Length: 428
Image (tube, rainbow, N blue to C red; front, side, top):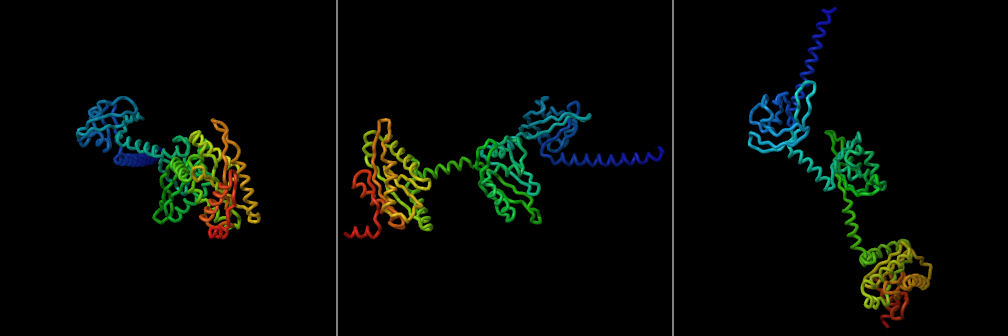
């Protein structure tokens, strides 16, 4: 029996030896292609083995460093597990290395992993630049839905690095519900057509706050044209959105009262008339000029005058519907646009009701630090379609009516005249 088993044992030994040497060869090939240097030490501190990168990083001019004391190149090396060491190699170059000690195992010598600090610093600098630029890289495996985030992206979704495992499911759950359909449609369009992916969307952080992101990317396909993954970058644009919104507000709103300015008012009036034309409804345009405001401004100062304007702006907004427009044209001139009015009501009755509502908001005294102040108002009212179908015609009609009211006394209103009546008055 013993004789029969001996050849089998020898065969097993041969197979094990073959596998061992194959694995050893793979390891050596891997070490030869590493950019990091690897050094195995003897117990006496001499170099037992090293890969080509180690010789380059140590600056060794000799073809083989084996058997040489490591201290010849790294005299300042300490026993710390990780450290940075400067050296002057025999090639004449000064360099700094990050050295990681890997303890000996199973009787083998200690391993040292050598990394050029410039490469480490470049990676760290790249990560910091992504963080401060609020931009990160991502890639998404379409089939497995595995998602990779660079470190900067975690913060864009409200997480610490490593706090969560990125996944497509987590990404979708973080996108604002109102934006998910848009984002998904953009991804599918990119996958199906190959065109670049470019979307702006909101994400909701775990604490409930909302941020704006802009995501760009493209699809990667195999040799047969099958989509494999999407790759791209994402950037935090929350501050850009806020700045754009602020610039838009400054361009379209009065800085003192917050009401629409003349530019925004004329744009909104055109849109309002277009809707009224389609729906067959009436629009009222009211010019408002304050009486007695200049006296308050001159007597009490501009700060008091500004307070009067702010107070009256708030009163007008409170007296009207959310769909109505209140704007300040400048100085003490305001304008109101009311849409969706019925054409079945007599124009005179409509004007009387509008004037009563607005004057009730404007006439009450205003409490200032200098005491109670009183202002009056003159109102000019023009109606669409009765007094004109264009913006210019209605503006002219309401302006003329306002001056007529001002000539009639304080807290008066006048209804504009139809185009033919205005032409007849002009000819007289």
